[in-house]
Amino acid sequence: MRDPNTPFRVLAVCLGNICRSPLAEALLSRAAQANGLEWEVDSAGTGGWHVGAPPDPRGQAVAKQYGLDISKQRGRRLKAQDLDDYDLILAMDSRNLETLQSFAAKPEQKDKIKLLLAYAELEEAHGPDVFDPYWDDSRFEEVFLLIENAANRVAEKVRHEWAVNR
Ligand code: 4NP
Image 1 (cartoon, protein in one colour):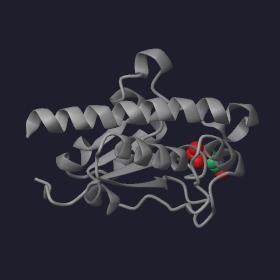
Image 2 (image 1 turned 30 degrees about the vertical axis):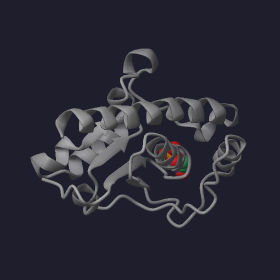
Image 3 (image 1 turned 60 degrees about the horizontal axis):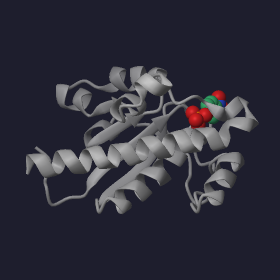
């Protein structure tokens, strides 16, 4: 059981930790705040190419357009300890979900790993994966809005479950 006196910790995971998960980090934080939830949110990549790098400039630009400054974030690589340290781990796509699941040794670790769009109940409308905009300049706003919708739904869902189970 997690200590109810510590903030709920959420980790967003993609491949490079420069496009999708930095946006998810900022949008989940904003959604949590809007729902009165005290969350600590971070993001990580399953790949290590962009460790220490700021988010992709195209992602920074769209975030800024929607009132979020993500310029201070820095890329980091997922580590095994993250599976113990976080309460909810949200994979941006099925490939990252598989990597996360392969890291998870204990059932309690497996239980907290979710596919973002499935957990947000957007899988039927959008498929299982948050598409990777890295290779397509034109899709950063679209991916931002998709992640924003999912983040809002996740925060509402957690708030609701918390209210029901307390
Ligand atoms: P992300 O996008 O997983 O949304 O951060 C990517 C960024 C960089 C690379 C792949 C995906 N890369 O191969 O460098």
